[in-house]
Length: 110
Image (tube, rainbow, N blue to C red; front, side, top):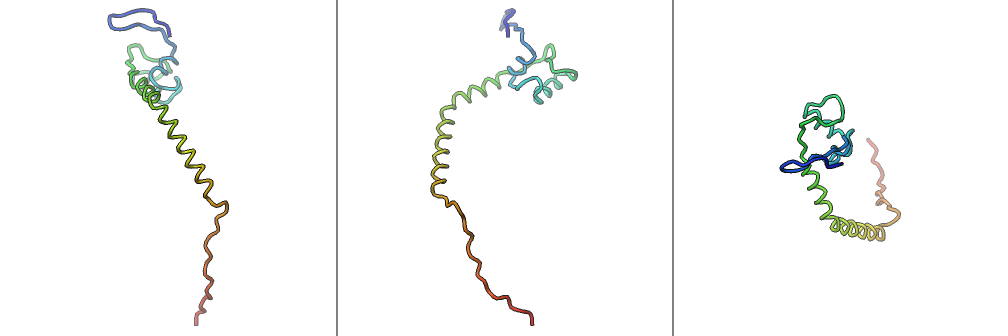
């Protein structure tokens, strides 16, 4: 991305189609969600954004900010789950034997 100009409330940038898709929160221009967004904007031909298309990037940025803010909690939770799994491995029998079925003679029909 390259900043190529300034407006009264922001900047004008030069970005590849892939950079635009990623800034909008999609993995690439082949992403099904990106293609759906393009169709809704009137582009049925290729993977390039339409001139005048409005892309809400705040949701993608907010999502990543929440992930970063909770990274330490997720690591702690993963450690706790690993510890619990290790404890369970120690107490589980290696072979499970089903309960014995009482052998009772089958009554013959008279």
